[in-house]
Image 1 (tube, rainbow, N blue to C red):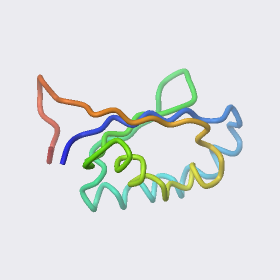
Image 2: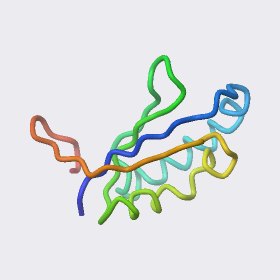
Image 3: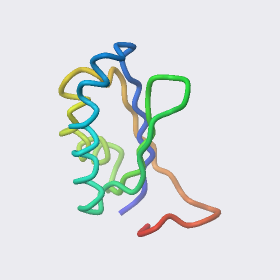
Image 4: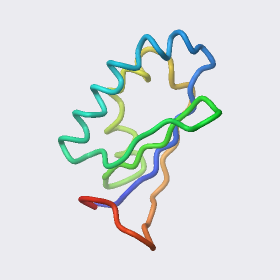
Length: 94
């Protein structure tokens, strides 16, 4: 399995994002416990976030995140995945 950086772009609707955030984070914690998700967090100053996941392909990385409540509720308005290679440092469990 490879590592993929998945970028989310969120809606500007901060109220909707706040309302769904607890369920979104619970879902991400489940993916973390399963070993699919390695890192996740929001960008500062712009609506969106970055996730690092294990998958076999870009499509597989996005499919692994299809159950995200942010996606279901329309908080995510765009997302993309790119294979990522760590050249300096280490990720726990990578």
